[in-house]
Length: 280
Length: 249
Image (tube, rainbow over all chains, first blue to last red):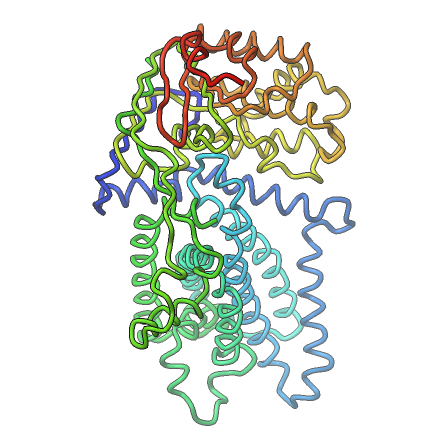
């Protein structure tokens, strides 16, 4: 990371040179990597301050997720009449992954709006606000996922070498979440009607994605699963954990979605980055 | 070498009318093109020319005082120099690390302790956690807040908050200090300290830009003055000469 205290810095801005060049894109998105120390430390501080003076600290996240699993296993399973041995692992893994996606994108609606004061006071690249928020949710996700091994102990399923693929799936989801959050946050700071619309869209995605239902058990409407990119992103991450290799279609659609969204994010960020300070 | 070079710099602010951000309005605007019922200008962005045709050059050791009425463009100019607003006209060249010392208290967590805020603020200013730890003793000594650093900063007075923020910013050892008038919040003793520190920085080949209504402070600190009026330069030169241009009160 480049420190403020070393070396010379030169900044030369000419108003008319607003053309989008690859060079400019690269300079704009470089802080994703070069300032990782900043956003990681800020996010860790957020989590620490949130759970200060609590008994379990951030492990409260794990505890509440374990409680959800318990409720599902003991109560909801009976109502649904589902076979808990297959349903509970499916539900908990899917729900944990979905939690990361939906809470990040949901929070991104207000990230730039609430960082408005800081955006006007310090010349910090604005994507650091997004990365800080995503990192916070990633820490929460990692605490949530700690419940999964315990579910496996109660309802063991076959875990093979294929599970390694879920790391690739997670990486895709991470890039997806970062790109979506940058885009959503910049739209939301400009158009203040978008946050409630986003909440509705996330609700919709939750129900049309295989989270509370298993894709193998649906009666009709398979087209929804095929066309829903979230279903594929879930598949390439969850299926390896459950001991199933994702299909080629899953990989192609998941990777394609992430690539398109990231390209769009780079365009929107480079194009409108300097405007956000006026909208915030 | 530290340089600030502004050439015909201009800033045009888009100001969103209260309802222009809404989709409903966007839809109405489109509809109006068809039906012609909604007035044309309603809901469109208005532009404020906040700065217009500003040119000056600051070299190392220069201490520029910004003068002007409320709304003359002092803070906007400071924000442009800090890289927060990009110029919409002209050009700006800045060589050197800048340390923003305006909008006191922003990015500070009211509930967190002074120590925690030192860390957060340091991160935001671009330091790594190790660099911050190295600086903590220096900051603590300069701020002279003692045990208060353990308490949440909502318990601080504005003068104490100033001490903390200034001490953190001063520990950065930047080349360009950009300051707003809040520096006047400090008590006499702390003002003396900040004054010494500022001179220290300018001696070390730095630049200071200070916006203030306090003529005494400007006279003590600055060698150059820039009088703004409605976003344009009314006078620029040695600080004493610029004072003569001030309209009589």
